[in-house]
Figure 1 (cartoon, helix red, strand yellow):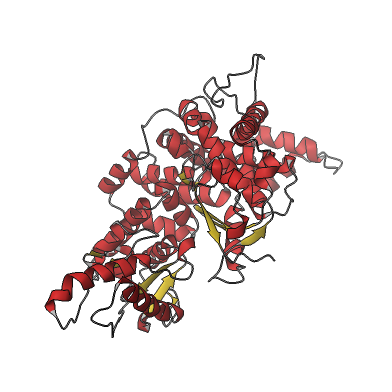
Figure 2 (cartoon, rainbow, N blue to C red):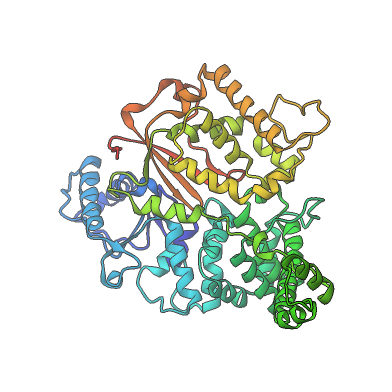
Amino acid sequence: MTRAAPWELTRRIGRDERHVARARLRIGDPGDRQRAIFALEEALRLAALPGEEHGRIYFFRRVVVERVPRDGNRSVWGVRTQRALEALARRAVHGAAGDATTADAVFFESQEEALALFLRAALGSHALDAWYWPLVAGVDETSSRAERIATAFERLRELPGSWVRVARVLFAGDRSALEAAASALDPGRVGLWLREFGDDAPAGGAAPPRLELTIAQTVAAIVERYGTRDVRSLFVAALAMLDHAPATLAAGTVVGIARSTLLTVVADARNASHAEASRTNDGEWARRELPEDGRHDVRTAARDRSAFDGRTPPAVAAAHEPADRARAVAEPLRAEAPDRNRSVGLASRFAGLAFLLNPLARLDIARAIEREPEIARVALAARVLERLGRTCGVAADDPLLVWLENELERSAGAFAALVPGPGAWPKGFSAPRRAACDGEVLVRVWCLAVRRWCRRAGRLTIADVVQRFGRIAIAPTDLDISFKLEDGDIRIRRVALDVDPGWLPWFGLAVRFHYIDTVTAR
């Protein structure tokens, strides 16, 4: 049990921690004080509340544990504390509900959700006078709007996923919110944050990625206001890069790619402006190019139009086709949970596919990305899982496979142009001797490496690992998978395939496995 000021609590808070701002004990015999404090701290540590294993957090305005007998042992304290917290948790309301300000207990589905709501309210200049906001974000009521926004950034950065989580929260909102964040941030603080993204090295020979149209428009608007050399423009471009390809944070190439992306966005915006200006001259160029007999050849007119205005209108819209359906998939996964108190997410009969992340880690995929930063932009881990899943019969509508396909779609352009270097291969493998290798060869070799690892370490096939029932909950930066307690497999446990990987920078998610006694099929 940690005692701290309310605005200091979230600096250390985690899924399995309890924090108390102020505690008051009424004890008849002063000699029992230390024993009571020890028993209460232990009871708070051991208390379990609905949904906490999947990230739900609770805030209680006041908790009363009363009528504990003087000779009460640790068991008595634990039972009384558990009952008091459970009674409050059953009456808790969501922090975004209208009656949350008067409730004695509120909850959020995750700490990220709580901080995201706080950030959006601060960006929109909404009132943040509810009793729980100082506990959520770690700021008091007297702080300025700019300080609240910056503090929300800092708190999100301290969660697993770091700046990837910040990027996902920011770009999940509307364009005006992102522009408001850029205008409220202090350039000096932004410059310090940029140092955490890695060295400002050149992006290399590969072309910078094409951002989605809406994101590219937002970045272009901020660049138009501050210029390409302002740290705020670079910061927003770097966050856009992390939202597009989270693994670039592990590769340390975010800033370099962000600079190239800025130039690309500016050039595309200029070309789009030119294309729009040329469209306003449609009547003029069409009249000039129409033949005397009144016939109009569309292909000839298009070619002559380019000669007329000196430009070939770029296919900007085609380059920026929206490819990000991952957030649209994640929301239904959480919203369709049949019972929040038991499990969350959609049912899957191939939930063991996520177990293969541990062999990928053993095969040094993180080191491969560090040696060859270009593969950070092709979602290599997602491609390997998708390929292995399909070979062992994962259903096309499986929620995890749908999410993986969305990630592959986001990085399709970078994958098509990938030329793997000598450091991109799994541990124990070297580059094939063929003259030129592409991304498909790289994925096949990594799949082969995972198969060999499972067979040698645990005498397991990929189907043995993958085909098992579970429930999957995918958030922007979290993947939680729940299995039935009785479905625990000693073969999986013996080779540590079901050990929580935690935050995986090369995968872009924090992955956790849960074994509970009520995972229902649907």
